[in-house]
Amino acid sequence: MANDNRPIIKNQHTNLLELEEHIYHLVDVESPNTYRNLFPYDEIPKIAFNNRVVPHNMPDKIWITDTTFRDGQQSRAPYTTEQIVTIYDYLHRLGGPNGIIRQSEFFLYTKKDRDAVYQCLERGYEFPEVTSWIRASNKDFQLVKDIGLKETGILVSCSDYHIFYKMKMTRQQAMFHYLHVIRECLEYGISPRCHLEDITRSDIFGFVIPFCVELMRLQDQYKIPIKVRACDTMGYGVNFSGAVNPRSVQGIIYGLTTHAGVPSEQLEWHGHNDFYKAVSNSTTAWLYGCSGVNCSLFGIGERTGNTPLEAMAFEYAQLRGSLDGMDTTVITELAEYYEKELGEHIPERTPFVGKNFNVTRAGIHADGLLKNEEIYNIFDTSKFLNRPVLVAVSNTSGLAGIAHWINTYYRLPEEQKLDKSNPLVGKVKEWVDQEYEDGRVTVISDDELVEVIQENCRELGIDL
Ligand SMILES: CC(C)C(=O)C(=O)O
Image (tube, rainbow, N blue to C red; front, side, top):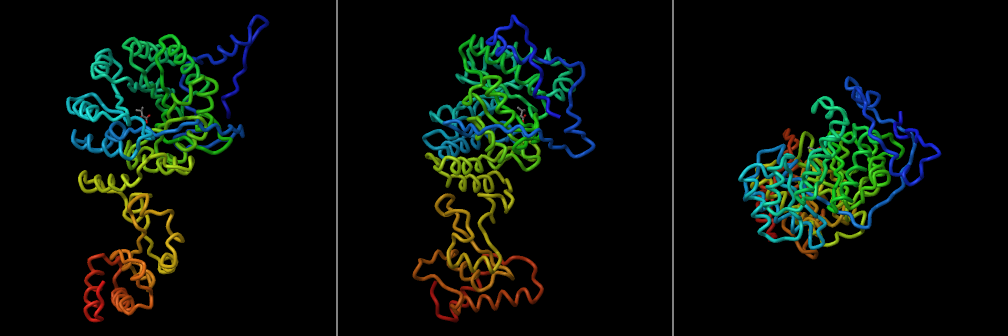
């Protein structure tokens, strides 16, 4: 199934350096290669293996770029200018002084979009750098230049699905068209960021690499950096060792860095979550030679969304052993802002930000938590997210769960903490048990518990 070992045709006159340079030619097919073996459409897509193992190659510096205002905004109601600026401020704080959130991309279509860009630029932050996303036209290049931005994203769809079915072109026509547009952009002195849409269904060696080789030639000619963003538009990418291209994340990154010569720091991975793989694929891209992973806050993006930015902050810290200046407590502030100000509902079980992400219900777990919170908490969530570990009270909470709830809710100091033998805990438990015996099926709310606790405190003469 592999399509990555095309024969190298050489003769006695070919010198090896030339050969190196010319290995990857555009393969201009007459009909689209839709990889039916992998994407049968009327069957579930398939993951095939050729057992070619790519070596780890994590760059010295890795970072996050943000698409909250581009892919993120494509899939929800538009943000107001004020909201964009507020979120940009949060991103600046979250990413910290080392610019772990290095860039953010903005539409320039409407006056409102441009106002947001002006206001964010006025903040004067080094990070995230403001970049744009435009239609590839001279008018838009001029706009980017007038606003004073250094870099813009340009769409260069690379699978035959897009080239043949959407653009109605051949590969050669598409490549000429893209190179023409990119040259124009370079003529304006703007650095193009080429968004290789649908790379995980594209012919990596027959189109993507020859195209990127041409991009690197243009870069040499114009002395302006050209970036490459590998877009897993449909979330087909997989990170399993030995998987076949075009679905292999590491295979794609290896091809782009090694065969096309794209430097790691000019390479980004843009993932989608259709098969629940956005986070692990992005981490894989880092591990195999891609400096940038493109993310959106809370993963809000087309269909199932993009790689959640907050997840990659924690992936970063796990890989590098340090937050390198990121302030992850801002993630909690952002989540509150999205829920309260933007009316976005974050599902309760969402890692790091959902209401229940560090809430435990089962009595047996609560018992453990009461003894030592490390037993059932992923890390010090109070320190890194301002979210103390919680126990929700239900029919399975038990005495330990109720004691933990009271201790956390009332933020009792260590010496005043109640344990499961405390009479107040016993009284609340009796009430809870009665509720469920009477047929209750829902979790008990904080307000209900407070009322019962206060009532019993009065009776027992306890002051919390
Ligand atoms: C529109 C393109 C660049 C994209 O966001 C994607 O491929 O997911």
